[in-house]
Structure formats: structure tokens, C-alpha cells
Length: 418
Ligand code: ASP
Ligand code: MG
Image (cartoon, rainbow, N blue to C red; front, side, top):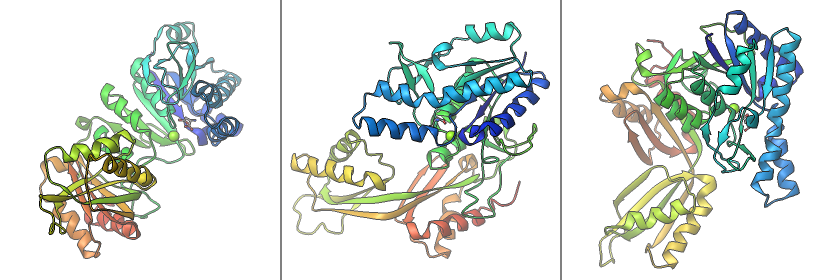
């Protein structure tokens, strides 16, 4: 039997009516001849409520009990989905993670998949069951305790099952109807993409497009699982949504496929650090240990070199705004311990990052120039630039973020197909 994985996010199972609506979509695929593995999230808002209860009960909670509590939202929706399908005469059975068993590492709250043995589900399908409903976001540790995968983890559960069961496709039903060239709230010219490559989706996901958990895209890329993102609130068919797939499947591709942004960025500059071998390691080592996600890095000649007898340089980097305090503490700690020396730490907390992403960049020159002139025309000043093979990012003043996204969307004609 051909097999599909269908994943329903929190808003798609938010109440009994929506569960029925989702179950209808499952029934339609069964009618088309598929066996289906359904992955469900908790009802929207439920996981937040459970996390809140844990924090209120025990601020320095035992992570094993955190997982015992926060995994429970998915147990409810899995059972309800199986019951709803049974009421529609579709033979269905629900499974919690440990029953499959979904084997994970024992990092509670951030567990990783180790193995998903097929035997139990295969036996059920062989008995004539058409649908296996799996509680997303959870598994079981080698010690036999319930684990969870990190927020948004049901996407990763879905992809892992699609890989383990060699599904024809993994359909992610959510409250948006696909992946867009940029956030439609920023420009009404944003266009839904028919297809996007794994690599581009990975860049967009990690740059702040919140549709898919980044790890789910990494896993899909590794196992070449074709992922489709579509809305559970629309009438959908084979053509609906956006397909995230291997780049070989994408015939025509534009130079730039999308514009991503990240609003809450900070720029930090260490003014006049010594220019010597090992200085970058001495700065970024302590930042990494403190858990600061350093993104862009620039080292340049210091304007304040006068009065220093040894060569000095300025080191600039960016990180999320909410990590500034941690970064400051790590750097001051390194200075007090005599590992680094600097005159001043300048912090700009009003930055945002805007990026253009596209696999077409590999074979086209001039993308950066086009990006910079589009920003120049709008008089947007660039603070830091970073590039990779398929991405160019700039750090700018936060107040110009929307303007920059709109200007770049226009400059690369993302509203037009082909
Ligand atoms: N319910 C979990 C969360 O909100 C997992 C998920 O929905 O993917 O993070
Ligand atoms: Mg989600």
C-alpha cells in the first residue's frame, strides 16, 4: 500500500469541530487508496498552558517531570483523532510515543530521535487498520521515561515517520496555505511558492519564517522526504500548498526565491581589541560557552588605534537582542580574567536582519550588487553584511526593516512567477 504521513498542527486540532475537519482530510486520502500515519500536535495553546503549570509548580523543575506533563497535550488529541476516524468508519488506532516505541536520547525537553522501529505499526496495518494516529512531539528514553523533542517538535516527528516508513509524501497541515516569498503581513505582493528546495527552506526556517521547525527540514533534507505545507482550513487537493523538495525537482528557479527577516537583532562591537593570533577564539569561545548565538562577524581596522603601542582591531558581531546581557557578561568575564583586552563595548539593540535566499545565486553574479542598490535607493544604511552560497544578509536599523523587505521583494521581482 502507498503510505502518506499527514501532520496536523495545534490550530488544526484546536477543538472537536476542527478535529472532525482534519479527520475528513484523512478519510479522503484513505479513500484514494493510502494507508495513513497521522501525527497530531496538542490543541493550540495547550502546550503553553502545561509549560506554565510546570513553571508555577516548580521553577527549577525536574526535566523528566516537565516532559511527563507537557507531552500530555498530544495524548489527548491522538485519542480524539482516532475516535473521530472510527466514528467515520475508518479503522484507526492511536499510539503514544512509548507504544511505538519512538526511541530517543534522554535529553529531556530537547530529545533527539534514535530509532523508530516499524514492527508494531506494520502489524496493525496488516490487520486491516488504515490509519495510525501518533502523538507528536514525544518519545521514550533508554531509561524508559517519556521525552519531548523541543517546541514545534511534532513537525520533526512527522518527518521522522515519513522517513522510517518510506512515505510517498509528508503533508504538514497548518493555518497558512504554503510558504511565501516573504511574510504577507509585510507586503501584500508576497506570493505563494509552488516549490522550494530543502536548502532554501532551511535558510528561511532558520531566518525566522516560523512555519516549520528547523530540525524537521534538516531531517527531510537528509532523508529526501518530500514535504508539503498546506492549510487545513481550505479545500485541498494534490496541487495545494508548497512542496519542499530536492532541487532536482525544481525546473525553473529564480535567482532569489525569498526574503526573510529577523526583527530582534543586536550589534555589538568590541572597540580596540589586540590584533594577534588567537584573539577571535578568545572572544567567541566564552560567548559560545555562555550560549550566545553569534551570527554575523566582522573584524576591521580600528579608528581608535592611536595611543595603542600594539596593533589593535575592532570586532563586531550580531546576536538576538535577548542575549545581549549574556554576551556582555561573558565578554566582561573574559576581560576580568585577563583573556582579552578592549577599551569599550558598544551595543546597538535597534537592529534587524534582512536576507535574500536562493539556490540560483550559485550560478548568477551580481545578486549582492542588486540587493545593495535596492537598499541604497531607499536610503537604508547597511551596518553589517554576511554571505553564504545561497544567502546574503544585511543588518540594518530596525525601523527600516519593513521598507527593506518590500524594496528587495520588488527588486528581485518576487511577485512575478517564472
Ligand atoms: N505541542 C508542541 C508545541 O507546541 C509540539 C508541536 O505542536 O509541534 O511545541
Ligand atoms: Mg508548529
